[in-house]
Amino acid sequence: MKFGYPVKNGPGNDLFVVETTFGAATTNNCLRFPERIRAFASQDGCNWVYLGEGCQDTYFDFQTLGWAQYVKLIDVSPVLNFANGGDAYDLDGILCLNGEESNPVPAAFGAGASEVVSYNQGLRKNGTPITADRTNPSKALGVPQNNSTVNFVSLGFGGNLTLKFPYVIFDNPVENDIQVVETTFGNATCASYPEKAQFEGSLDGMSWTSLGELCLDGQIDVSAAGAIQYLRISDRSAASAFGGTADGYDVDGIVAINTLCATAPTPRIIGDVVTVDEMASLSLFPNPATEYTIVRLEGTQNDEAWTIELIDAAGRVITRESLKASVGSYEYFLKLNAYESGVYTVRAYNNANQLVERLVK
Image (tube, rainbow, N blue to C red):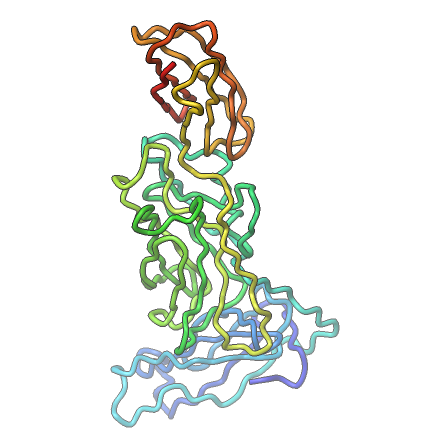
């Protein structure tokens, strides 16, 4: 329904919804006739905010929505509580309690989630904490990015993240409703890199409905819940499928994609495939080598401390170098002129990683 003017969000409740229940049934209210609705409000008839659930005559507050001109009511009466002749919620009228909004400034609604409700970190495969720059949950808000910065949050094995959208996502019965962009380095597939997460949806942040599981990027259908404003993401990656520094499912961005509202802007969804790998690796080139080899570290973070050692066949450290890596990758020029021919080990390590490669001179 649409009101003839923007309805003001004033002190206390803003709407009084009047329902019709016959005669003495109102004496015990919902105990006898649980005629119930869920209420939603909107400024543009496109982006809806959930106001709550009510029974028979009931009040609603606009909450954080400054004003509204549209109201959506959905019957949720429990059909088993009524005789065959019951016809659920009966709407008589709606009273606006605080009058007209004189300065209706439209709210801004982005395509992605707008609020972090909770973030519970898991650990990396090797039991160490996730690297600090991958633990900012606000990086999962808004739309996905596409650059070389760490613009996602890692859940860690067994971790979870709960996000809130600024609007309600209603189920579109003919298509999926949400696009999830997960960050995995390069062109990994689920078969080669099975980062998985379980998704749950909620209208109120308290009652949750399972929406299924995804591996890497994918789409979610909210039909099991009907409508949601909260999304909980729980890592379900099998740690046995990963190396020691892997840190589970990485959330880059989540946006609504259904087309229930013709006036809604098309969301920008870009797969993020150029951020640094979460698993550090070590390679040597050339190998075999004569005068030098280049020690290349992949999956490093900016200003991350590393130590590189050259170890001879007897296990003795014959050279050691401490350095600060750059984001993404780092190369160190290791001179070999002073050393005899033979088989060596190159070891690169820090607080969270220990990598080794065999080197032949």
